Amino acid sequence: MQSIQTPSQAKRKGKEQRDLVPAVLLGAPAIILLIMFLIGPFFAGIGFSFTNIRLISGNPVEWVGLRNYQRLTKIAVLSVEPEIDPATGQAAVDEEGNLVYPRSRDFTRNEEAYPQYIGTREWFTMDIGDTRHYVLAGDPAFMKSIVNVILFALVVIPLQTGLGLVLALLVNQKLAGRNFFRTVYFSPVVTSMVVVSFVWIFLYDKDNGLINQFIGLLGIPPLNWLGNPDTAMLAIIVMSVWQGVGFQMVLFLAGLQGIPDFLYEASSIDGANAWQKFRYVTIPSLRGVFVFIIITITIAAFQLFTQVFVMTNGGPNEATTTVVFHMVRKGFREQDIAMAAAIGVLFFLFIIAISLVQRFVLRDKEA
Image 1 (cartoon, rainbow, N blue to C red):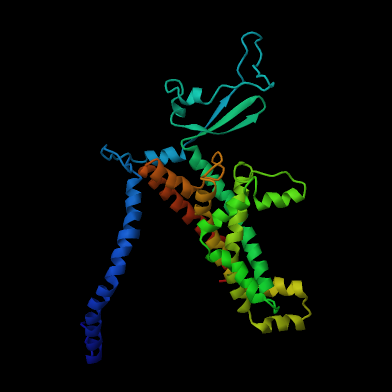
Image 2 (tube, helix red, strand yellow; image 1 turned 135 degrees about the vertical axis):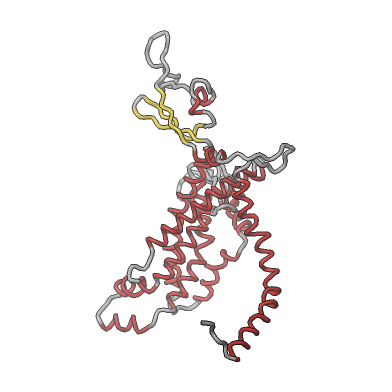
């Protein structure tokens, strides 16, 4: 049975059809720009990852399938025993008394005898008893970058979140000069990361840096903060937390000021002390802020790039290399666009997986 439109319905439908053309014309510039600079490059990158395209090359582009992904994700373990000294028949040792093992390259370059190790390089080694285990990877720098960003995130997320909450609690007190401290704590956030990185390079300078001069007063010898693999990532972490904690402070401050006063008044009537108010009133009321902050810090932590690019250039010995830095290095320095695109796709899937896990863990169980 055909429905009958009333005059008002027909008039409204006609108006909607007339408004459609101006709406499309107004939205077209934004839609075109999104397609050109966001959606188009996204899908083009996925397509490039299945080819051997290079930034500048006279060779034609070829379809290589999953070869780039296989190289990035390939991992193998090579176990070797100590070399035998022909003169004594015992395990050979060097001048320092350490056991001498075959080099990993003796296996990774011998395609006839060890085809399973072709295309891999040494990532790291483990000695268990007298056996040395070489962990090989198709792209050791990529594997190191994943480990580095995970380590960075595991340290920065709780540290920056906790400091942001502490600062928010401090500047939320009714004290003189609190607006001044709010400005001071937030100012690094609005300062260019490149500028902040250069400032901290001077602070970390091994000869004249302010940090080394300060620890020198405590009797600690100066450290090469950015040139030592053991301290380079720590230096990046400290600078990143200092630069970004002001943003979390502002978010927590907004959340604190949104908590109704009657909740604290009711808890006082029930005899709650300051700690109990914080635990049972403040923390539950800030749950939504916590979820937002943790997710945003996580995404920002895994996208670490500028600090590394300016301060350490991925070194020393890949100690501060991150996934984004390695992707840029592959694409523009080594001109391997296909491999950089594959890294980008894997990184995108990795971020999506982390975000889904966080949403599941931090979901509101009462909803």
